[in-house]
View 1: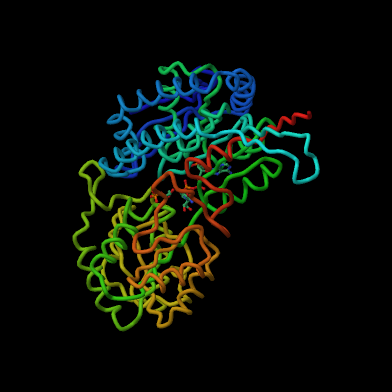
View 2: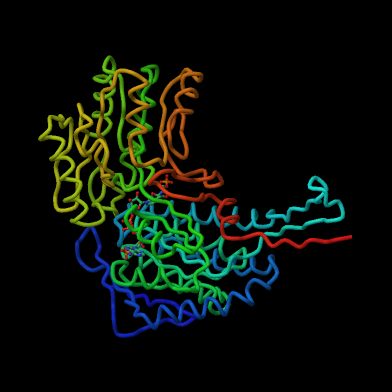
Length: 471
Ligand code: NAP
Ligand code: G3P
């Protein structure tokens, strides 16, 4: 069994209290991490505050060199990291390794981009102040709290931690409980990389028990959170005087506006809906299609779903157990509600504990919960809708506004529809997705506030410092 301790001020913390991490595949313990108490958490913030003052004075190239040491250890330990992740969140091994390598790419790009966060210089001439020159540099905000979700425990954590550190902030990092093993492992790597004392702290503990303590500490200058709407809203309350970037849930629609290339559209829809068993905020979570080719699309989707392997992460199955039994009960509830109200199960609707077979539901109507709620699991509803206007209306009725996909060969129609859909990003002829990671990534409405993406994260974790020269 794995055991990793919380990491505060470059010390590994053991206090006799442990948080057990359950392997979703075996439903047995995968390991344990320290369950921190109030005093430890307060110490993490004190250390982060103290360390930040010297860290921001370290030259940018030196900060980059420190982070490169850390990155090199990630590369060296890539298989171990993927293995841990696969054990604690049941992401298949190939995808877990893919997540680690994608993170290395993000780190490289972030470190390069940090060199290009140039100051802005301007004169006051346009406002009648011709003898003033202002130089506005981006400087660290201070102490950043990074909170990551279970589904990308390595990537979404470091996509916050690295931009914060390179710009001269210190970090308090709270991993998701499922994801804490790999989260605490980062503390071990930071120690080996000899990151300066106190700039990176890993605080482990169950969110429902220590979440308020972690998010309401007065030392926090900014919170970067990815997770559910409920917890996001709780953080809005606790951190109301703190800068916030929140990336929350989604109910991304795919609008299929022609039948010119249904085979290709179906490939994108399958990969969008069932990647990591549907546990992606950007997963395609509803498909809108015209009746006259809906049967054909459903047939193609069914054929492709039949070929998805279902099983264990170590065998690289496409569909692996969802994160816990409680989640699979919730997903099953959505399926059952749809069936009761007349939806047709095309394939799936089978489970063993939290291993759920990919499910395609046809003839879904707007009175069914699955039309609106985020399952975060391998289930895809098809809504047959016969006008583009109605598709847009139903897409926009959702409380979520993360992304959407439009499948259509006529670019004028696609662009015209894209402009009317109320989400952060619309993907024409591809699944919804966060990457490439240099793009801005954002949700509107309940899907979040603020923007992530490499450059945007560097900006959101800094503020202007203006120096005005009068002559
Ligand atoms: P979650 O339950 O909201 O947890 C997210 C993080 O918040 C975890 O680290 C969790 O710790 C912590 N947390 C829980 N309660 C807290 C509290 N009261 N105060 C502070 N932190 C608290 O979400 P999840 O189940 O990990 O992830 C699934 C959700 O995240 C889905 O809704 C999905 O759409 C969304 N998501 C969005 C994006 C995006 O970029 N838009 C990306 C990924 C996921 P514990 O695990 O210890 O509870
Ligand atoms: O759910 C996490 C979110 O950020 C999605 O990332 O790359 O799967 O679209 P991706």
